Structure formats: C-alpha cells, structure tokens
Length: 145
Length: 377
Image (spheres, rainbow over the protein chains, first blue to last red):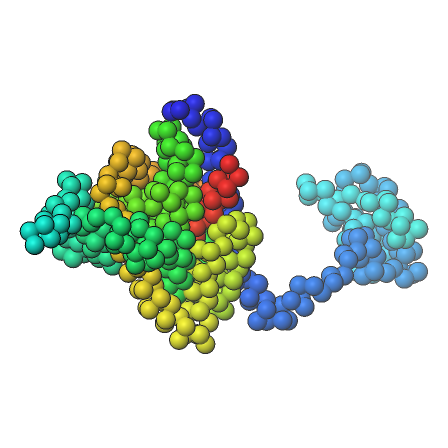
C-alpha cells in the first residue's frame, strides 16, 4: 500500500497531529514555567514580598462614605449649608461659583470660604465640566438633612 | 597440504569478497576522511567509519565473528545498541556538558526547538506514503530530529532491523549540517532578517540552573513518559553539572561515560552496516527520506521564527530557527556562521544554543510520543 491510502490506513494524519501537539504542549508548558521561575525564586529569596502579596487589602469604601468620614458637618455648619442650598435655589441649575460666593458674602453667611470648600469636598457642589456647577441634592440630603 | 591452503583461501576475505562489501568499505573510508580531514563530527564519523571497515570484512558464517552472529564479541557489544543502552548514557553525558542558561534567559526560544520537530512527523507521513510500515516510518521520521542517540534509541525499540541505515543516515546528516542547512536558511530569510540583532540575555542564577533540570524532567516525563530513559538521563546529567557538589560525577559523565558509550555505539553501528544486509532498496529510501526530514526540520524552525516575529515586540533573528534541530552544537555554529556572513559583528551563537538544546528535549519527547503511539498499533 502506498500514498495517501497507506497514510490513512495507518492513521498517519492523526498520529502526526497528536505528536506535533504533544511536543509543542510540552515545550510551551516548560517555557511558561521557566519564564516564571525567576519570579518565584525572587519571592522565595525575599519573604517580605510574599507577605505583602498575601496581606489583606482593606476593602475600599465607597467614595461617598469616605467623603462623609472625612468631612463631618457640625450642627452650626449644617445650618450654613442649608442657607447655601437656599441661595442655590435662587440660581439656575448650572450656576456660577463666583456668583454663589458673592451671594454668600452679601447674605453674610458664616465662614463662606470654608463652607464652600466643604461643599466641594463633600461633592455637594459638583463641576459640570463647562465652567459651571450643579447642586447634588441627594448628597446634600444624605449629609446634611 | 594443498587442500589445507585451498581451504584456508576459501575462508579469506579475498575469496569471499562481494562488491557490496567493497562499496561499504569505500563509504567507511569516506566517513573516516570526512572526520579526520574535514573535521566533520570526527568523534562520531571516525568510530562509525572504522566500524564500517570492521563490519564489511567478508567472513564465513559460523565462526562467531560477525555482528549478527549471536556468539560473537561484536554482537555482545551491539547489545547496547539493540537494547537502547548506549543512547541514554550519551544523553547523560550531554546533560553534564550542556549549559541551559540562554534557554532560561529567553524561554520563548524554546518554541523554535518544538517547531523544528515538525520535520519528524512530516517525514513520518512521507515514509508511510512510500510503503514503510508505521513503526519503520516512525524510526525514519526521527532522523529529522538530527539526534543520533535518539534515532538509534527509537529504532532499537520500533524497527531493530533498520538500526544500521537509520543510524548511519542520522549521523551522516548530523555531520553534514554545515552543508545542508545554510542554503535552506538563506532561501527562507531576507538579508534584513539575517541582520537582526538579539537582545542581551539576562543573567541566570545558580538556583535557576539547579531547579531547571528537575522541573523539565518532571514536566516533560509526566506529559510523555516514554521519553523517560532519554530525558531522565539528560536532566540527571545536567543536575550533576549544576549542583557543583557532584562535580566529580559530572566529570565522569561528560568524559568517561559519554566517550565510552560513543566509541561502542559508533563502532558497532558502523559494523552493523554489512554490505549484504545494509545495501537494500529500503536503505536508499531511508537516506532519501532522512535528507528530506532534515531539510523540513530546518525549514520549519526558520519559518516558525518568522511567524513568531509577527507577534513579538523584540524581534528574533529567524536564522535561530535552524538551530531547533538538535544537532548540538553544530547547528548553532551554522547559525553563527551564516549570521556573521551578513554582519561580522553579530554574535548569534549564544542565542542559537537556546533552540538547539530545546531541540534535544523536543526530539526526545517526539521519540517518546512515537514510541508510545506505535506500541499501541
């Protein structure tokens, strides 16, 4: 028997494919392992890196929670913030910050600069990306109301 | 008294000679010439060449002289070939001589060693198509691995009758690496590709070198257990070398053991090429297929390197693919020579050793795979 007939009869195609696949698999596996070997050895030689690797990371708290933890409004400040809310209501949805500050100064609010800064930090006042700002009512309700 | 003389004359080689013996003696002389005068693999070609002279002295059967006579000394020495004893011993020595640093520095080059083994399986198909039995076709295909001991080992297990032609073909082509490979390499690469410079390999720690043979052995032998005799000895030899504390054993493995095994293997393989047994149409077919196998293996490595370059940021010189055949270190030397013809300041030898030694591992795995698959047929 000769030619393709002989190859088919001896299952030659399958043997060749399996053979090539196994040789490649073996060497690919080996190359992957030895490519990682020096990294593993580097960890082995420096155990502190292993500890760092397995050290539990503190779960990241939601941003709002972080903010609320960082800036806590005192009762007196909450009153001022509420007054800021009233001023904002007199303005358009997308308002100018200098204008709000001006209104706060005219209205003689307590510590206008500090409180305006706190409104920023707490993301109650949020930039809209076009040079104006918006009032986040949900955040205001959560932190102040 | 006359009858005694006549009887003695009838037992001499002059009376028993045959053109086939004479032809093989000429081939043996050719091998010795290539080994000594041309320095082509002298450690292999000289013992094989002289073995051919030994095996082709016309002798009368029954005196226990010929290698195929069960009570002859040569037959006992040949036992190491037919039972696959010498090849693992040679692998032990190769392991004790081989430095895997470049492979560890850039493991991706290992894929070139795998790609070059494709030649084995394509030739296997070719041999089947030419009418060889599957076990014979597998033994012929392994010539493409360009690894003499592996070819002999597999043939001893699968087709012992073909050991002579396959061993001679394998070692002949290994010796002819500097002649066969360069035209294929130049044909498949552009000048620009041949000029590619390789990145400097990173430094390898001693600990990596010690761990490598253990990891390689476990991984490869779990995948292809039939490669155990060859890969086991290769990795063991390398561990002896790298462990440093076993330097005395490594010295023995890389000198006495491999030298003894090479002498006995070369001489007996050469002696097994008795003209009346060796010169058959199938031997001619084996030689032709061996050349094809070797050529395909070289081409596969080069083409695969070019394919890899499509995906790699740091390009590799595709000439390195030719070193994927496991003729250590000849094919790596050929890569260096061909590369330096284009750019004398480009040193590729060190980089070519990576696919070269992975070719040794790859061909041993391929032999193991073929052995286990053929055993089931």
